[in-house]
Image (cartoon, rainbow, N blue to C red; front, side):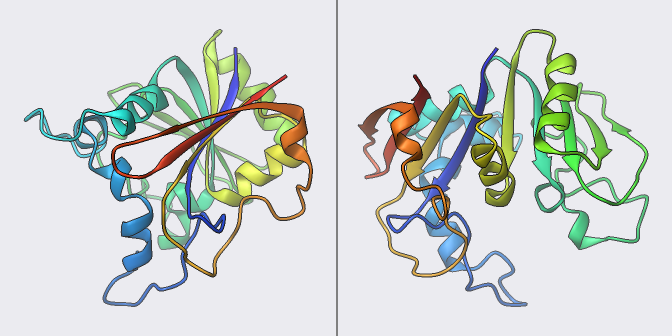
Length: 214
């Protein structure tokens, strides 16, 4: 069992963007940051439900496919689930639609108590207020020998990095400079010394950097 995380980041290390507007709630920079990932065949089929077979099939696709492989449980923050969209609506089931792409138990870190939400495809969202160590213990038990993915957002991944709980971190480094947002590496000086580091450049120009705990 491996505890792993995957993030898309800019050249200057930002995993979030700040150019959102009411008309464009994700912002142009977010689209640029994740463009290579969202163009892959796996993203189109697994997240968008596109069964046409369209999408890129190169190095980016290899990492997109690996993102979902061998995962037995996931941990994510309230923002990734979408709780901030409807904080007082207990009927809100997140912004992942009727068939969330996870297909495993998902533990959502939040201080807002909610009942678990189950979907027909195996996705079950559980909501808990817990430390990284406590959440990981719950997810490890639910994963039944599979990997546990720390899905995000960047604040959650950083909490698990600070706690030295992540075994493998994959960053898709896009060749663009954002200049503001939340960075993955702040206050984590020297953490790379705990990992073996490898990299691979995709046809899109994205550099896939993998940190594997020594």
